[in-house]
Amino acid sequence: MDEQFVEASQAGERAQTSVDWRDLRDWLRLVEDGGALKRVAAAVDTDEELGAITYLATRRENAPALLFENLAGDKTGTRILSNMLGASKERFAMSVGLDPQLSVADLIAQSRKIMKRRILPTAVAKDQAPVNEIVLTGDAIDLTAFPIPKFWPGDGGRYIGTGDIAFTASPDNGRINVGCYRQMIHGPRRVGLYCSPGKHGLLDREGWWARGEPCEVVCAYGIDPVLFMVSAQSFGVNQSELEVAGGMMGRGVELTEAECVSLPIPANAEIVIEGTLTRGDVLPEGPLGEFTGYYGRERSPKPVIDVKALHYRRAPIFTHALMAKYPSCEIGAYYAIMRSARILDDLEGIGVPGIVSAYAHPAAASGWGMVVVSIQQKYAGHSAQVLALAAQCPAAAYYTKWVIVVDEDVDPTDLNDVLWALSTRCHPSEDLDILRNTWSTGLDPSQYPPEARPYGSKALINACKPHRHLNQFPKSTALRRSVYDRVAARWTELGFSGAAPKLHAFHIDDSSP
Ligand SMILES: Cc1cc2nc3c(=O)[nH]c(=O)nc-3n(C[C@H](O)[C@H](O)[C@H](O)COP(=O)(O)O)c2cc1C
Ligand SMILES: [Mn+2]
Image 1 (tube, rainbow, N blue to C red):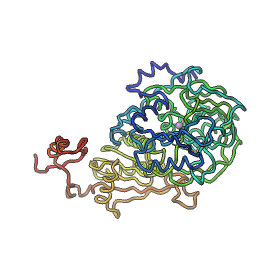
Image 2 (cartoon, protein in one colour):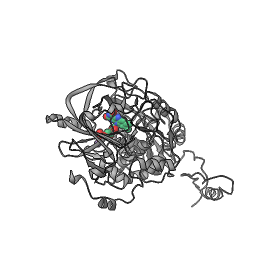
Image 3 (cartoon, rainbow, N blue to C red):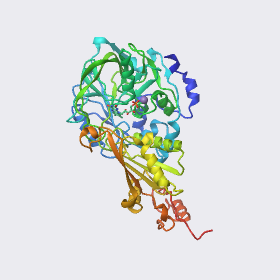
Image 4 (tube, rainbow, N blue to C red):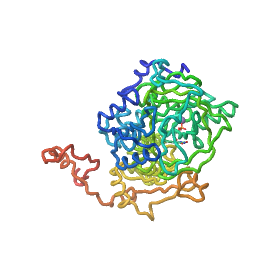
């Protein structure tokens, strides 16, 4: 395990900036200081009521994070945090040390840089790790004593893990994977772990089982936002999300030794379990209301973690992720920004010229449903090339049904702009193509029979000005730069508050030399 760590000082030197919080409690203080935390002191039932309050409080994009401090019937002092990041680009930005005032487009550009950094975890002594405030093993453990929510009326059980992380190790090379996989509670020491096909937690598990060994697993339920958001993104199978999280924070993730398994545990988490998954040990699991806004797969037998150790801080804060339609879904702004950053990386890696920006809006099924790419058209066929490549590049290929290409004067993060381009530059009989039998998911309810769902289809929509007629295409009504600058400089004098809106397209004067 030692080589997985570096000294804290070394890690610090490798980072350009580092975040100004150390754990979830620190982070909450900063969020509260910024007015973006709402404490709910009234007693709340975890049986659908907590889910209902979270849903109703998040029907607007700038909803605060919610800290439920009084859970009906609870004797453990547990608190529950929901809407930790949600649709808030500001909370994403402050979590990773970026300026919350940046636009979504600028956050995407900055995220591309910090997502490429890698910093190894740092080791914390067991007796210094906050998560070791209380440590229980074996039959002393009773997870059912904690208040565990059932979110939606049709959920198949109570889920202890939604805003969670799960560590597994590769039996081949020891790489520690961090994934967010749902976890239904079955009993005092029994927790279901659902990984869908292809997920790295599942590949690790199958690898151990193929060797005839149980798969060790460590799960945390009260975690900081960076571990959470990184665990929810897919990185290469041999990359450890721990190093990505370190890179995004500008300092190593703090880990400490476990009691019963050979994996490390996150030292600053609020609550952690250690256990094993054994082949054949399954129990009926699901369904759960999903990010699509529908219930997912039918109830079926899924592997169960046999819990061997429990660590927690006194009055632990569980992080919970409501899955719902935007903007109430915990797979929200951060997810859309990070996915968009990776789509731009893919397009840059392929080497296609003229790419300006891209956005996978979170209202489209948490950023999975639609991708808009803006380009500076440079040659005949350029927009069609970008459509085809964006549709199938690794970061965008999964699920995405609508792939739209627009000109550089259209901001992909501004749906009003995108709808303008679709309505004035796209001629459906000319500008639509369909890809069939593409990579999708059983969670897309639009196809029948349900077995057909993993085979998706994609509409490629060219909403660029027609290249053949670029010269004749009417000029858009845009302000003259000199007039804009003059007005922007007088914005306060004119009686408006704040800065004048930024524009990225101006009148082009053909008569000037
Ligand atoms: C709140 C939340 C719940 C999720 N639930 C599951 C799940 O139950 N099963 C699953 O396979 N993926 C789930 N995901 C998606 C995975 O976290 C995501 O695909 C991630 O890339 C998995 O890590 P991996 O790429 O290392 O396998 C969930 C994501 C979030 C944010
Ligand atoms: Mn992974």
